[in-house]
Length: 75
Image (tube, rainbow, N blue to C red; front, side, top):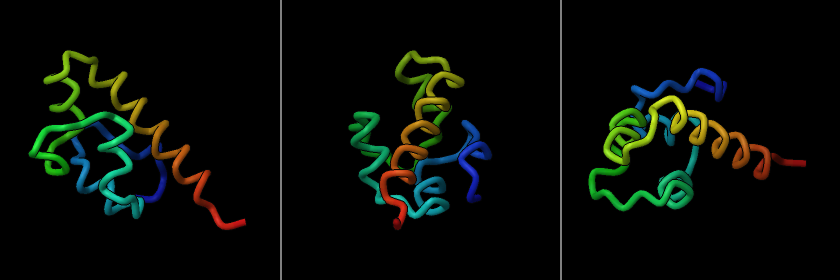
């Protein structure tokens, strides 16, 4: 996938990192994930384990990806 809007909460962080060429630390650090299962865990599962709405967490993930991609675009 190449469009951030196509990210869904069933996707794993591993899949998202590979799809967007993100370093594994980008989402891990931005979302303060310390779980040893990262990146082989889904957005939905992570949100539920944190007691957060999966939809709200998905929006946060998309925002982080967008900001990262914008800040790392070649001029």
